[in-house]
Image 1 (cartoon, rainbow, N blue to C red):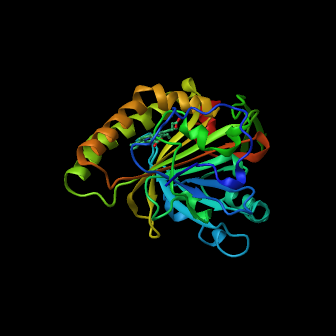
Image 2: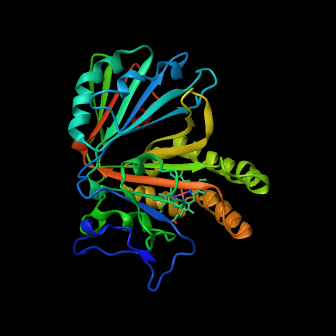
Length: 334
Ligand code: HEM
């Protein structure tokens, strides 16, 4: 059964066009996470630390107890400068209750920003109509899918350019692109960056832990190097194509050791900029082509891909950097 990526309870009369080709049948199945009926808004918070031993600084106690997030991942961004070891350790936390998050922030924000080393906070709270997440597999949810009540059946809106926008409920009747610029405000040692328009966030993940033999070899020698090039391009030259910040993170296990899962994390000026890059830039097309070729040759894949994309209004964002180097997050684009 193929169904729409937009759940029934978020379906409204469409006033804006879709790009689904006439009579389209996707070549392979993909699934979207279904939010519970009472979910209104979610919070996605990235907390980063720059220190001698950044992983040791990640805050286990702040993420438990009252107002704790519903799901947490830990990850590491390797340093892009050999003279500046060892990169940023990051906690990714998800709430489905914005009030619980407000309570958490009021309790922990100051202690987090005042902790040793450089500290940063990047947060958005998109309404349920303004995020979407898709995966090739329904087992082992990732990221915001941990807040879902389950998965759809195979969806129609994927495997063509523009399908990301078509999956997002708000695209039925809203223009999601609201290009703005970044404003800066200083408060002691905290630099606060405020986008003047809506911003688009993508977390695009890869899990090759199930691969073996030829497929594993191909992932590691053909696909991953291209992915790394794409991520490097966006980190170095992103602002020229509308990407304000891009990181390529490796997920850590509970002991802080890297696992065979990575994700690209990009803050974009608009979804239109992200679409333009994914659809036309040689760096994403190279990643895309090497993956599609592998799937065709092997008649399937055990590489697990997912992505989540959100668009948030300026008042649904918070970007704060305390004592961070000037290539950190949105500071990079100032
Ligand atoms: C879409 C491959 C990493 C951005 C796609 C699609 C494939 C693909 C096959 C079409 C999916 C569908 O609609 O069914 C890959 C592979 C990756 C990778 C194999 C890594 C191994 C990334 C990263 C980003 C990214 C890191 C950005 C941070 C996008 C976007 C789309 C897309 C925005 C949706 C385009 C649209 O629907 O308009 N990618 N990708 N991809 N990819 Fe990637």
